[in-house]
Image 1: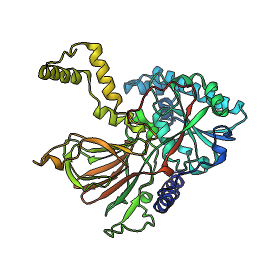
Image 2 (image 1 turned 90 degrees about the vertical axis):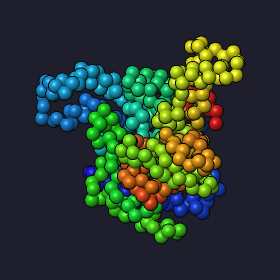
Image 3 (image 1 turned 60 degrees about the vertical axis):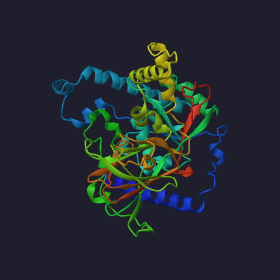
Amino acid sequence: MTMNLLKSVFTHRNAKILKTAVMCDCHRGCAVVSPPHLDPGTFKPQKVLILTKLSRYEFERRRHPELTEKELEKCLRLRGSDYNNLLYHHYIHKGVENTVNSVFTAAGIETRIVYRFDYSDPNIEWADAIVTTGGDGTFLLAASRILDRNKPLIGFNSDPTRSKGQLCLPQKYSVEVREAVDKLLKGKFRWTFRRRIRVTLIGDDIFKPPVELHNQQLQYHEYRYLDMEPQLRNVQEDIPPCSETGMARRVLPVLALNEVFIGECVSARVSYLELSMDTMSPIKQKCSGFIASTGTGSTSWTYNVNKLTEQNMEEILTIVKEETGYKIRDTDEKFVNKITEIFNQMLITSPEAPRMVYTIRDQLVSSPLRSECIKPRGVAKSIAVRSRCFDASLVIDGGLSFTFNDGTRALLEIHDEDALRTVTLHGDVTEVVFKH
C-alpha cells in the first residue's frame, strides 16, 4: 500500500504539476474556465469521498492492537495522557463524521469514508467532491493530494471545542450539517479559489528525500500525509535542466496552501539568503528565516509573526503622545485594544488574492546603505530565493521539509490553475474585511 501511495505521489502528481507548468509558460495570460457542471446552480455531486481524521484514540488503538481496553487505559495514564478525555473527543469527532455521512447519503449521494492510509489517487478520482471531517490538519492533508482545480474540497470541523478550524466551514455547521449540505445542493454558495504556491527548485541536491516534520508529534498525527519509503523518495523526474545554469530543475510534488518557510534548521543560526521579489535585483539578507504565505496562510504563522500585542501598541502610542503633544488615550485599554485589532486585521489578505505575502523574520541590517534592504514585510507575485546557508530547509505548510543549502535556488509562484476550489456558503457572516 505504501509503495503504491508513494509512486502515485511522486510520479502521477509530478506529471500533473509539470504539465500545468508547461501550459502556464504557453498560456500565462489565459484565464482558467470552470466546466458547466460546476456552476453553483447545477452542481450536484453524485459521489463524495469523506476523508476523516484519525483520532488520537484510534491512533493509540492502532499503535497497541495487542492491548485490552483496560491495558490501553493504564498505558496512556502512565504516559500522562487522559484516557477519558481522549475517548470523549473521539466520540465527538465520530458523531460529526457519522452525521456528515448520513446527510449526504440521505440526499442520494454515494459516499466513501477513508482514513489517510487509503486517501489515494484512485479514490480521489472516483469522487466528484472531497469532504473532510477533522480540523485544519485533515483539510491540509486533503488539499495536498488535490491538483485538479475542478475537484471541490469542503471541510467540516469535527471538534469545534478544541480548534477553530480556519480552513473548514464555520463552526456552526459542525452541528447544523444538514443546513450546510442543503445550501450546497441548492446552489446557495459561491466557489472560493484558495491560491497555492508552486515551488521550483534548481540545484545539485534537490532530489534528496524530504523529511516529514510531524512524524514524532502524536498530537498532530493527521498531518502526516506523505508516508514515503526512502528508496522511492529520491527518484529523479524527467524534467529539463535550468536553461540559465544547466543545473537540475524540479517542480515540487506538493503545492503550499498556507506557506513556504526557508531558513537554517537550527533556529539559533542566522539564515543567509539572496532574495528577489518580482522584477527587483537580488539582495543578500541575513535573518531568522523567510516566510512566503498565501492569503489562506495570512491568518496563520505569518499573522502571528507580524502581529502587534496590546503592550507594544500602548508603548508606541505613549511615544507618539510624548513626541507630538497630541492627546492620545495611550492608557485607555479599550482604545489600545481597538487600534491593535485594526493593525492586526490589516495583516490578513483574501485567500483568493493572486499574490504572496512575504515576511523576513528578524531582519539584520548589516549594510550601511539602507536602500539595499528589502522591507521586512510586503507582497509579491513571484519570489526567487538563493540559499547561502549551511544546513537549511525549505518547508511546505509546516510539514514537508526539503534540503535547501548553499547555491540551491527556489522560485515561488502562484498560478491560476493551481488554485484549490472550496466553498463559501451564502448567509455566513464575514468575520474579516480584507484591507489588501
